[in-house]
Length: 132
Image 1 (cartoon, rainbow, N blue to C red):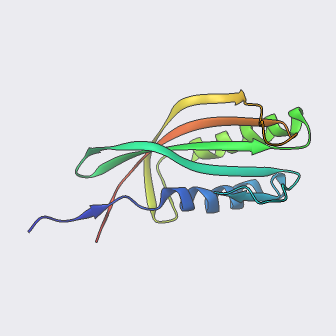
Image 2: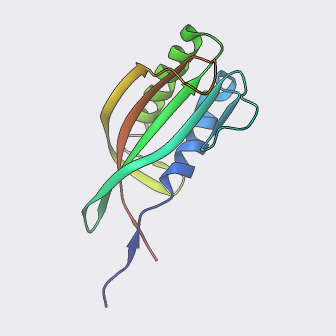
């Protein structure tokens, strides 16, 4: 019988991880932007990925960071990026992160829907799927 392997919920794991690591730097870390935007917000989105082989998945995560000023938003994004890289070789939630790659560095990405400055970056986490 073939073992069935499923990618862990890396989006949820990254949200919990960043919420813990960022602490007071971010008012909210989530996968959705609430109707009322907090002063400092981080959104994590699963934006792609692929299966390397039977025991390794690549998951692409885009992290957007809003704040009341460009300086604060940029700082929030750079600190969040550092923590996403620091996950290399560790377990985040139920995901074992074998390797972290950069897909796109921190960049200013104006938000057409709000007046808040936004910076974003994208990383790829290589994770081990779980047996079900």
